[in-house]
Image 1 (cartoon, rainbow, N blue to C red):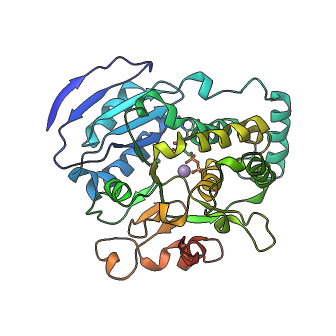
Image 2 (cartoon, rainbow, N blue to C red):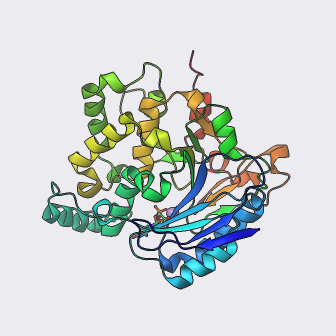
Image 3 (tube, helix red, strand yellow):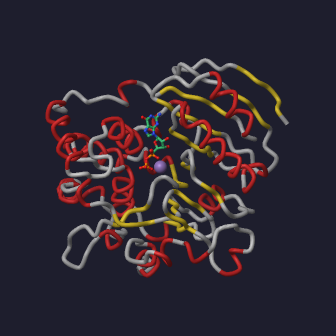
Length: 337
Ligand code: GDP
Ligand code: MN
């Protein structure tokens, strides 16, 4: 199957390409995985499952991204477990550092305070760069330029069910823009001003907000944020959506406000608020049939759809933790007229 093994020159420092001939009609799509050298073992576990359950039949390519150069061992061992091409990209420093308008002293004080208050990842500096990168930059990495669709994967996640169709083609053929497996409520302490900032943005950019959208998914009866979001460690979505004027203007607005550093805004609520503002329910898809685990939560198919799974259906978040999950709320929303 492996046709050529070439070294391709790119703006990226480390890059390795293994080309595989496609056997079926495929979408212009890739897996995108932000990861570190130390994640090698967890990532191999994940990729072997993903290949076994899906990609051995489709050979979609992989893009691995890192803010530090990937080691030769990492590239070698990862290339051996994937059946699609593997490209390893270095993140440009401008995408993983403080913008000039950020007051780094203030950012450090916030981290200290949030660590003392035991906010999850509150004291963590690199986590903030990660969230900002996943919010605003991964889709602008040169290695992603040639694709229209992405499937985000993280080291350590599990895939429990046979996926016997192509989710990318499903998205494309059904005019979907954003697909998720798990939705849940965010920790409020990480996003105290994200909602108000988003409301300010919406007032300023009325011209970019469609009449029919999914704001009901994220809004409480009193009009405030209900903390619901799609869990972004799994996403099958449109790169054109993230590259749109709408999404980019929203990201820029948030970035200027500084909440990635002065609070701890996650890429999940940021993506989700953008989906809620700019898309309607027909453009979003719950991959109910994809058995997916990211600690500590499952999306696990029920009934007949569980036949080719190893996850217990009663473990699925919307069954096990209905108050933490937002998926049934999502399902109950009316279809757009
Ligand atoms: P959590 O899911 O919110 O607990 O966060 P994770 O630790 O899983 O990080 C989210 C994603 O970003 C995963 O794919 C990690 O591998 C990746 N990641 C987190 N921090 C870093 C970092 O400092 N460098 C790189 N290259 N990847 C990171
Ligand atoms: Mn994770």
